[in-house]
Length: 163
Image 1 (tube, helix red, strand yellow):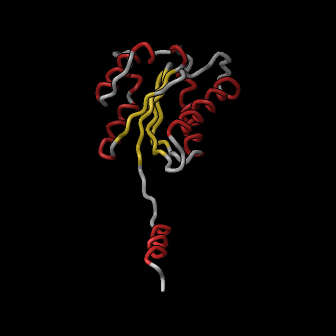
Image 2: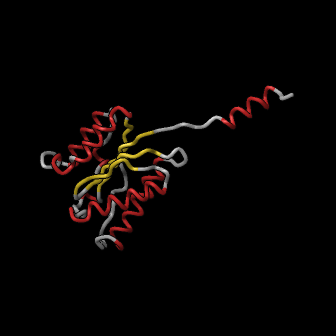
Image 3: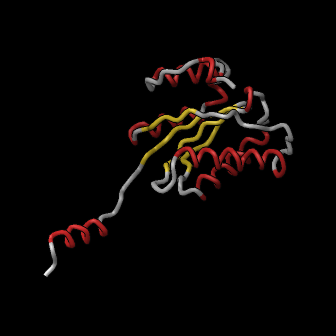
């Protein structure tokens, strides 16, 4: 006969961990320098998508313009957000300097912004990321990020956001 403690432990071992956390991240080049030429964006985004996949965090879409990137991805249940972003930025920075367009001065900003996305908003966020080029004909990166912070209820200090 199995003890109640052992039966509970056995049940816990068989229960799957079902998680789906969708995250929209935004990060810019250092000092928002226009270092991502249009002709290299698709290759950069594809390279970043491979890094997301290696870290069990498949990207649904990656897009952006000359000075920043947006990515919508499923966050791994096995790795923290900070590590995923660190690896994507580190790997893609190296790629931009050596294997991609060979931009030796390329660097990402130190920080990033991350926003949770509900499944019901995935399509809207995907369209938003797809429309970055058009969007930035009317709005600066700083104004865009301020609007995202406001929409998501994030308080911030301007002195520490723009590096």
